[in-house]
Image (cartoon, rainbow, N blue to C red; front, top):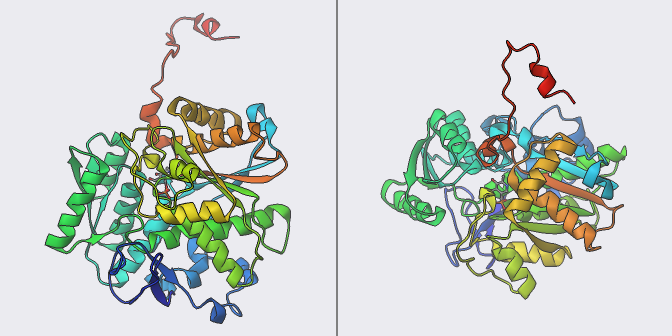
Length: 414
Ligand SMILES: Cc1ncc(COP(=O)(O)O)c(C=O)c1O
């Protein structure tokens, strides 16, 4: 259980026993801190390995729940780290892995963050939560709110894919379709917070979604040690992350720092790679300009809806991670990232989200430029299931067969 909430920018401390969003002094995100020194003797790598808990809550001591009975869980986390088969374009890599977050409840890594946020919101007495979202976060919020018995208001742009809308309606959320962008949806949430006392679950405005997502960093260290048959935790050389609001990127970096302070790892760190769509790349642009904050990206557009974030409140934290990790930032166009989805499906058997298609293509690009060494241990994040993006791949050219025609198979036989 955390001991305090501290502003990620001005370091102002905030009480932990009340529902709150941003820093009251500077309006930037709050981060949870833990008494890691006192945990170090009993919260050990071996203790975690011995646990039978099959969710991210096996890291309970560094998550926002006073005890296991408070946890709102649907079995999130503990996703597989899949070694890639060296076939086709994947042959250019010797140690490539996919952390497959599609295995999460509601089919994406958003489950981790929502499990942590809803757990804490419920414990602090929230009755109604609200969120602007165009996709996976809305689905996760719906189902964790349902499990916790909270009412959930969602504001989604009217061009949100049908799969996301249906999922939320079936799960009992109060869904409103808004004739505007995600930022217009955010304004409606803020008005609802003021008028009706809803609790705002927006990414990085809510302090605990990042705590759930950081467990991806903890898991990577255990997964890689298991893959190498090693007692000691291990980190990859490079991590590729599809970046919108950046919660997972910032969260994993926080996790590495916590693990070092727990004495679980040393000062080694992976190089972190931010991957964005060519049509919405504020962090890539800011990184290339050497800036500390990103400017709003004009006319943001991409089919990878998780990457359609023209301005992120955690921009300064993402840029810091890139600099500290000696990482880099890459853009991928929409046609290319959709091809990436096809390649992950056809060579690795993983039906990935378009955001992960971008991540894979970014690895190819950095391999070709020489930034990556083929022998390096590289982790690509597949942050969600391709099934929610079926609308991007309308089947075409399918063979129609008449089963009564005895020669019908001749038409498809090689
Ligand atoms: C599938 C998918 N990948 C990546 C992202 C971006 O995640 P983050 O906000 O942690 O940068 C999202 C966010 O909506 C998403 O749904």
